[in-house]
Image (cartoon, rainbow, N blue to C red; front, side, top):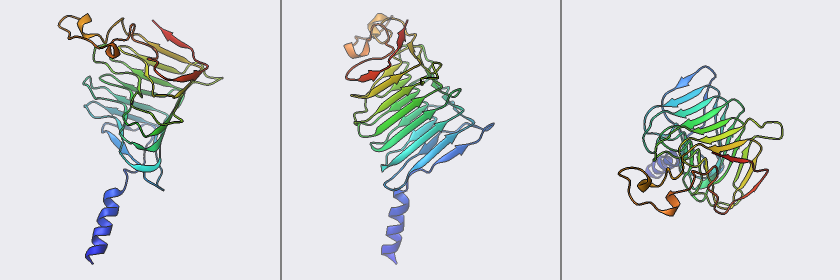
Length: 239
């Protein structure tokens, strides 16, 4: 019957992108998507490598309604493309809970844009980094290691390292290491570092550049571009 067909079509259309696993020793060169919905939690586990060389994120968290997305990285998630918007992980979801666990020895990186980007205000997220999150680009358009400025949900948290792990690293070679969400907690036992030169975001500081805004010109490129953020055990190193 037509009502049943329409109901089934609606159900399939609303289904979130499922969880996935990348086994140790496996290299995946296509971007992956994952989502959640009310009553549907999904998990991505990366024990191998996701290495994307185009302008798409290595992992996209799709827009969804409710539920929890968990990304457990024990290997490598990277985007080796130098273009803008070429990210490691990009969350487009506004209504779910996102948990990213980056294990000791694991790496999330990008060259063209942010290693991790939180793109919506409504998602509550926790990032637990025990390994390396690295934005490798050195140009004026390079992104952050963690760009969470669009996030505004209460309860957001960043953990870098632990009482027994001071080797955890959040690094950017061109811009801010962290552009934090409003009112988030940062618990740092490791290293948060920006190697960006002074005013690398100010376009009239380079030949042929355009006029710059204050928000575009941290001086120097900050380890943490602090707005309204609370933090404990913070050891942020700048060059």
